[in-house]
Length: 432
Image (cartoon, rainbow, N blue to C red; front, top):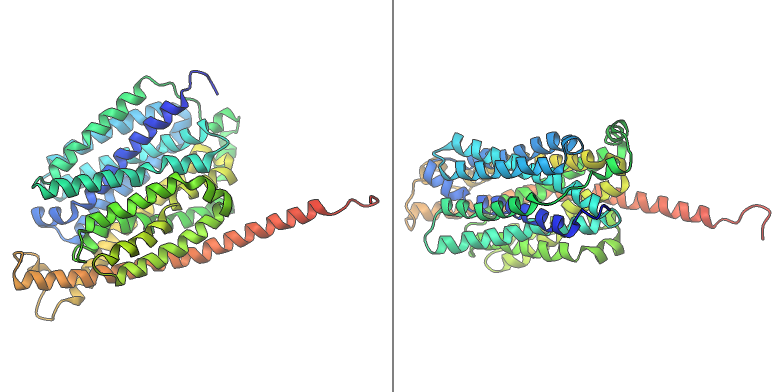
């Protein structure tokens, strides 16, 4: 490693940049209901706005991933910083659906640029410890959500609205820009290893890579879809729903920090299998829990989704190494594509299930105007509780499918390893 490359400073600056992406996620989760009320939107429309952040992320990963090798990781991060500032400011001055849509798109693209640059950066500066270091880097996505969720809860409790929540995000944005400014960046691992672009592109159409990409869509829909909507889906569960998001994210942060021994003991494929099982159980428990029992159910779900994202990236980087920055970008982009699909889908399911839970003489559109504390408001609150829980049961189908997929991956890989070990242990012919 070049002595001018200060990998600790690069790692720390990357973590701060990831905190910003997490803050946009956490504060947006607390803005769903305020946007519905202030701008007269329905849950499906807000789902499209929120989903734009994920579409933007996917676009940035697909474009930024190949460009990382060409223009360098530092220039990609300059684009990310600029887009974050523009997106945050535009959100603060938004006036309706389209202005929120455009500002959220800027933020999504910037979030994608951060991951397009920082994932291969971490893999390059820690070539012998990728899965562990990527897990530790991705601590700061749930860690940032904890920070953002607590900020939302505190500012709401003292009467400050969502525009102040957005304005606060400018501070860590300026910080990561300053941190990266004077640092020297290495070339990507693929370039340093002398792997050709042709080999890189060929590696992303191998059966293993395609299989993992398909799984990435579903892991991301399970994690990002649920976490983005949890405050709205469980708004009337009997506890502050934003604190459920904080609780889930806190468990994820602690779990990712301790990823090393767990990944070593279970293997990445084993971690993914057990994660899918726990995520499914957690979603079912959340769909039936009430009051403070929701925190216990959320803990099971959190343990399930903790290792999904970074372990998927680490698995691909270790097992399809020639895919390089492009492989990590495609995996991250596909993951957020799954998140993008999940947002309007979950919003639509939530609207439908809430409407079905209403008494026949009421409509969802009419009850949205109900004043808090009235009989109509209470009817809507109860219907939203039922609708949110039913929506979670739909999401639980995804980890059920993933359990089968990762089970196949786990047992296939362990059988092949056992066959290789048996072959090595066979005595050579003619020797004692």
